[in-house]
Image (cartoon, rainbow, N blue to C red; front, top):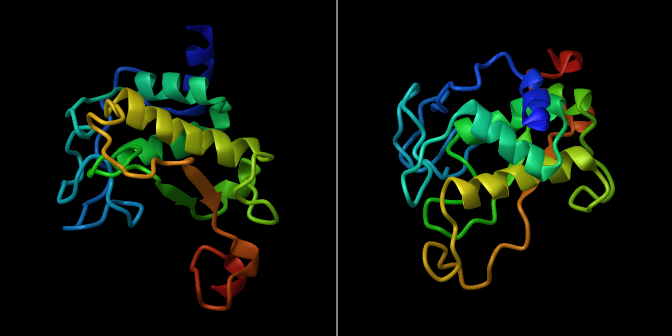
Amino acid sequence: EERVAEMLKGTSHKPDEMITFQAEHGAFTGRSGLIGMGGSGSRKGTIVRFQPVNRIATVERVAANAVMAGCKPEYLPAVLAIAEAGGGGGGDGRGSQCYVVSGPFSKEIGMNCDVGIFGPGNPANRSIGRAAELMWRNFGDNIPNVTNCGVMGAPLFNCIPEDLDNLPPGWSGLNEEYD
């Protein structure tokens, strides 16, 4: 309980606030550009129903999963963004997602966008990805051979940052050098 309370200091959201979609989701993509666990075609403000079992979650429950994943409170906004985009695994029950954190936030929390980007050495990259996997298991009820019918399995969930410093001119409006 103490660790979850500490994690909740990483957000201004109330612990009992329901996780809702924060953007419109198109026919085949979620906020992140990937099919989200909450399904496609959802409207902003709609409660996220984590698939395949239609569970809902609160900010506090997301924070508890972030604690279990080894996240620091400053990583919680990224974990909440993943939850607000629909969760962890794909709606088809296979998983193996990769999330890209865009903008200066990735630098603020020390994400790695260089050598070994998928390796175990960066706490932010790995723990945020692990939190997404835990949400898929705990909220979506990922059970191999029951709700997860992936043939090969998912070796890991990845969370990587956009490398703002090395984008070509005009590629991103987030980098002041190119505005």
